[in-house]
Length: 234
Image (cartoon, rainbow, N blue to C red; front, side):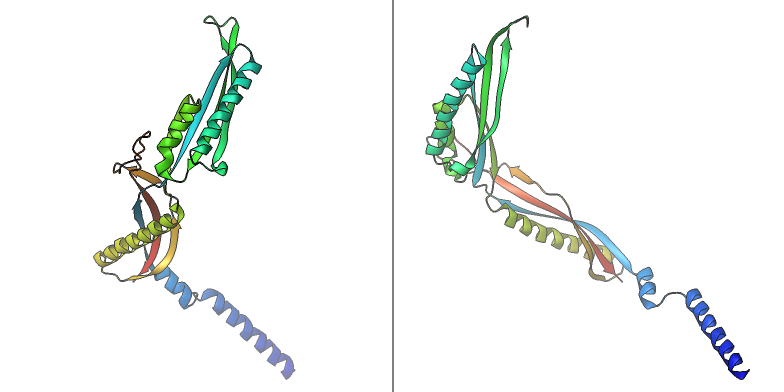
C-alpha cells in the first residue's frame, strides 16, 4: 500500500514539473534574441580601371538573284573577313559566328521576289586593345559591310569586382557605425551580408589609341558592387 502511494506521489511530481517547464518562458538565448538590436545598411564600393580588351561584331551582307547564290557569295566573303581578322592578331578561339540569315527581297509592291539577301555576323574578342583599330580596318578591307562595338572590358574583372565588394562592406560598416553612434549604441558583429548587383560603368576619361588605324579610345571603366549588411548593436 505504501509502495503504491509513493509511486503516485512521484508521478504527480513529474507532471507538475512538466507543467512548469511548459508555462515558464524560454531561457537566456531566447530572451537575448528578443532584446537584440540590429542595424541594416546598404554599402557601395567601386574600382576604376582602364579596359585592356574589346569585342566587336562584323557583318557581311551579300545580295543575289537566288538564295543559293546569295549564300555561296556570302560564304566566300565571310571566309575572307575571318581570315583577315585572324591575320590581324585575333586568336582562333576568339572568333565566333554569331548569326547567319537569309531573306527574300520583294518588289516595291510586295507582289514578287526579286532576289535574296544573305548575312553572316561574326564576333571577335581582341585581347590586346592596341590591335583593335587594325582589326577593324582588316575586316572592312576584306569585305565586312557592318561593324558593331566595341564592348570594352578588363581582363581581370573578377578580381577587381572582389576589391569593389571589400570597399562596399567597408562603406556599410562606416554607415552602420554612424547610425549606432547617433542612437547612442555600440556597433556589434556582422549578422548577415547579402550581395547586390553590379555592372561595369564606362567613364569619359581616355588615352590615345593606336595611330594610323581606326581610333579606339579605352577610357576608364568603373566596376561597382553593392552589399546589404546587418549588424548587431547594443
